[in-house]
Picture 1 (tube, rainbow, N blue to C red):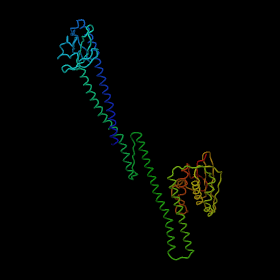
Picture 2 (picture 1 turned 135 degrees about the vertical axis):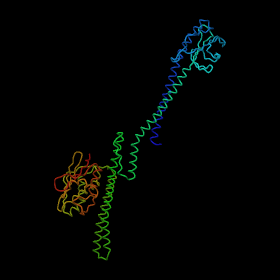
Picture 3 (picture 1 turned 90 degrees about the vertical axis):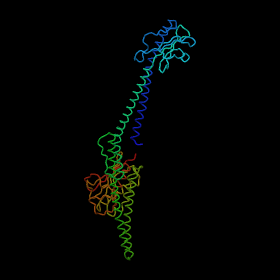
Picture 4 (picture 1 turned 120 degrees about the vertical axis):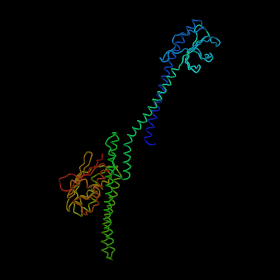
Length: 454
């Protein structure tokens, strides 16, 4: 069952129960009120007639031309009266009885309680009372209740008509409301189906309507926009990864093919194997970096532990000492130790990637400096190289996977193109950040901010 049908059925059912209960309650209350008014008038009239008959000796009715009781102010009603004597004997009766009055044995006790009575297909309201001075004698006084019954039938028809009209109106209003409510939902559902089918250009673009629905539509449009960007980044990442993997594989294949093309001496084979190992090493570094990017992207926020950043820095410097020594680059550490939040192997990788990047861009004989500045809640590391620097327009782009800056394009610097991406992902995983500082000095300055351990 659809939402629209359930909504209309639920609304109609609530209306049906509410209006039905209200109609029944009103009908019963009005009928009871009118009957109570007639009963009061009938009992009062019966007491007066019994007193007058008692004065006349108890064997004669004093029914005169005096008007009978009123039924809901419609007018005086015809009186039906009879005096019963001892032994179920009828002593006197009014000529209004079309048939013989009911026998005394069929009447309730003469205690002044009103009751319904039928006489010759006429519905009466009656009361049975004693004659005060004549033991064993009683008076039955009745009046037609046709007006009450007519009013009750009219009220029932009016309530039924009102109930039917209200129910139809409720259904129509519910249909209109649910149509308006689900109109925007249908649009959202249609866009969701198009996006699921691969149409990332689909947008809801809802400008008017309920505030909550409009906000939901805007959030979904923003989500689709973000999804498109992420898919685009993923496609570029896969394409770049394939390209980066293809280059060393092609080199490796070419070197091995060339080595096997003709017979060679041992030194030539050794040189070919060394070149193949270099290509294999590049492939290994690239696959490790790809796995690191995938792991950091899937892990979310990591749970760290207190580690000494100075100790991790010394370990990272030792890991890049071979590259720095080969270029004659000096790495300097300045600053005290401080406890930060993170996992040691992740933070060492972060620092190693930044140091490798700095050594790679620093000219031979240059210096890479690392300054550690602990703060109350954060620890800041500034890694400075003496390279060409980073243009302001590329300070965010260089953190994208496989991005090559304008000063590096066409150059084979030995990097995988993922080092800075991994460094930023690691920092983000532990609540930190990595940015390129807008520094006026020579080279590039990478600022790492990490949470300080309490």
